[in-house]
Amino acid sequence: MKTFQLTLTAMLLLGLTTAAVAQNNLDAARKQMHEDFVKQAMRYDLLNGHNATLRVVSLLSQDFFRDEIGISEEHARRIQKEIMGTNVYDYLKNEPRFVSLQEKQKELNAHQPNVTEDTTKQFYALQIEMSEMVANKHLSLFYGNLTPNQIQKVNEFHISYMSETEFIFPGMFEALGLSDEQKQQLDNVQNEIMPELDQHIENQFRLRTKQQEKTDEILKAITDLEERERLRHDMNTAKKVLDTLQTESNEVKESGKKLADSLKIKMFDVLTDEQWERLLKLTDDPPEYMKKLFEQQRKWKEAWDNSDSKPEAWAPGPNSWKPGDPIPESYRQQRQERGRFPRVNQSE
Figure 1 (cartoon, rainbow, N blue to C red):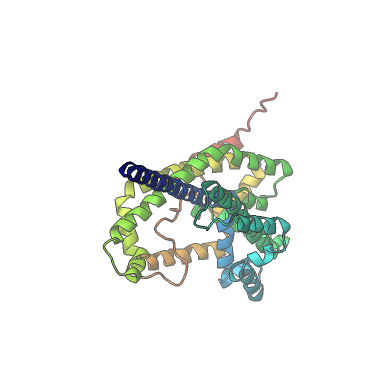
Figure 2: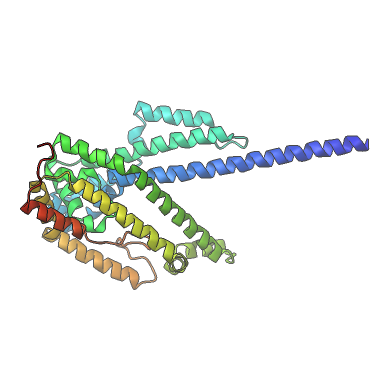
């Protein structure tokens, strides 16, 4: 009997250990899939300017911005309602591919207690594809509501706003009248720089994870859940966290700036001299409404820095991209010299 009890105990322990390992593997798979999902969203934004477009949608609340783009207040409200105020899934429910992905997700039943690691991976793979369709729908809803002239104005805005943007994207250069060959060249540039871009996203994600861990460590002594959540979003908490990770944060920003400058140079090289001059005009001598926007954002940032609470207007958060020169100075000089001394055709 004693031997049987020992054997039974061993079998139970083995079963519990196996279950624990399986659960750990599942938790690890869920964590990895979630990370992949977030990274893919970041990658999509950098390549397609998704957040840049949503920024334009938010700026439609400003009279001076609407006037420049040529959009009435009623038109702006309609655009904002379609993109921000309604459920984009309502537009996608009639698209066969999206519906098919939703049905596959339901069949997986990934939230059941005994879900497998493989099922979890399949679930997140579907989620990534669906999220890209949602982002694409945002873009199509926005640009589908604009006339060609209004789209031109929006792309000119993106170029003038380059000093405030970490990564540029090909779509903005449509304002310069690109040829089909140039569009393909810009796409090729993005493909070439993808490995470095993925590494930058990895660095950003790693830093974000450390920020979350540091925040949890600072707040673990707070037993009141409501107070803990309030402090989690408090600027003073964010500043404490950033102080402990300042060196790593600076390294990520510096490497990101080098990558952004490299991307800019490669894309600028695709432009003709005439297009380059038009770009310089938009960045060096932006329209009056852009100067007004930059001044307004400076005031918003000051209000943010001098306030314990978040202002009603948009203001950059603690992890925002640090604005800089839209054009690397060394490239500006090189391009100027190139104009004085045209390059010799290498095929001659």
